[in-house]
Amino acid sequence: MDGNGRWANRRGLARTAGHTEGEENLAALVRVAVTRNVGWLTVFGFSTENWVRPRPEVRHILGLHRKLFGRVAELNELNVRIQWMGRPFDSPQARTPKFVQRAIRTAIAETAANTGMVLTVAFDYGSRTELIHAAEQAVAAGETITEASITSHLYLPELPPVDILVRTSGELRISNFMLWQIAGAKVYFTERTWPEFDGAELDAALALRSPA
Ligand code: IPE
Ligand code: MG
Picture 1 (cartoon, rainbow, N blue to C red):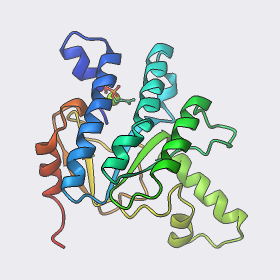
Picture 2 (cartoon, rainbow, N blue to C red; picture 1 turned 45 degrees about the vertical axis):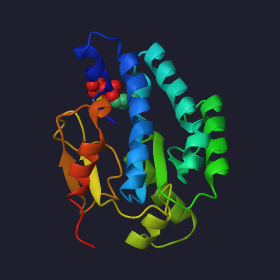
Picture 3 (cartoon, rainbow, N blue to C red; picture 1 turned 45 degrees about the horizontal axis):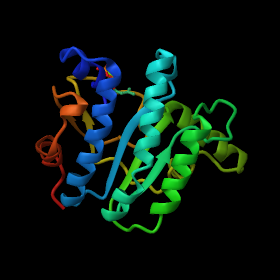
Picture 4 (cartoon, rainbow, N blue to C red; picture 1 turned 180 degrees about the vertical axis):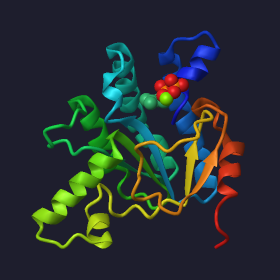
């Protein structure tokens, strides 16, 4: 969900205001996505590399993730099941603070019975770290390394391969996001920043879907 800072800068606002707007936009976009029969929506909320940002900005983003995972009533109204992926809380390098962990666990538990769209939020996530973790798990289980064994040890093995990858803010590059899962994905590039990514943008991205 790139471009919150630029959205704010262009309006003479603090970067934190851009993050607040970005979180609101995600809530709005989830509402639209369920009407478009999107089965799986996975968003990059915070990366393993983002911890070096100024403390006040990181604190603000943490609070917004607590708010996001706190939207249980809305998610239940929409029949959306929420998931999280990132460095497991018990791993030595994990950075997710306890108050965000609690919000994540509660949201997952309280939306677990929903049968509609699965919204996955990547937080304290890095794709290379995920792949190292998957390989280590496979080795520890005594498995031969194959595509199937790596896939089965990803943070969320239930996630299907990515159909469409969206890049906002005019960024014509791939980031450290789902590198294994995006093989073969269509890519939708837009100049719009994340807070400006609306239903029309979603429809333009979904137009890349292969005919069923
Ligand atoms: C995305 O917006 C939010 C996070 C990475 C947490 P940015 O903060 O990267 O916004 P820009 O790239 O500076 O515009
Ligand atoms: Mg950015």
